[in-house]
Length: 331
Image (cartoon, rainbow, N blue to C red; front, side, top):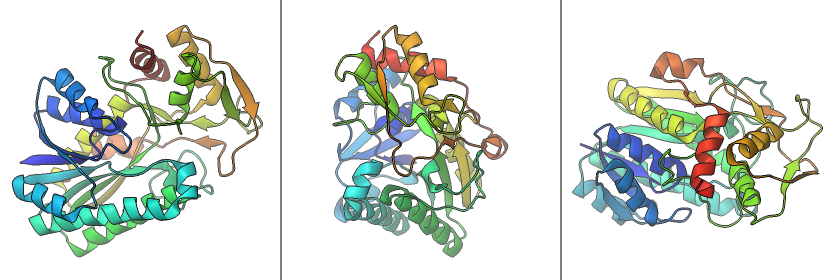
């Protein structure tokens, strides 16, 4: 029995595949390389010393999905595939709704046809919207401030509906906070195509001289240093959370929603200083106006992850920055 990993060549997907292979799982990857690179597949093999099956293509390609499920006995799907840039989603909402929601429906239809009834879904802390108070708990009302976030909200509701209609179906909705870091081998890490949308890849590009400074959006929030506070989580911790979620789905039916974070907030300037310390590189920055839709603080209540999955984060921000610097700057 195999685990299908959609988007398995991406940042979080590749690290999760490594952890799955090291746990002895049989893996099938589906990816179209829209925000990843084919060389990641060889790096996964190099790190793990194991092989896997790979299909290149779009998750909306129903014929490809039909063939993939016919050629493999898929027990569960870990679903990462999707467009994920907040700003781009505002500019191209139809692309995001089509790719993320329609793509997920295509995967679910293929699962239904083959009798596969377990999905681990890559959700996001963006579903907590602007109206909830930190720390965020899984029972809070969900909303969003952009089309990307709404796709996560809608897909969560779709999976809840699937579990209501089919009592044998198991869906674990993992709400990620802010993944950074890289594999300790230095072979895989976050390498977005084009201008980075996330803070850490941008910090890296300033540190290596590609950009001359970092824009810090707002220094007048009600936080210790005035800059936005986020819950940064090491990508390997996040990957291990998927292993725990898969084990949970194997033993339990129905829908379960779980935060994956550290439960601790780190400000933008604290992260900059931690990266400078880890890398020995200066990261010049300028204070820019706040961005519309940004909130002051975002961090998780992680007690449910420990209780339900037996999982908690092991790495701190210094570890994340050291591993990120090793990967991105080849230190």
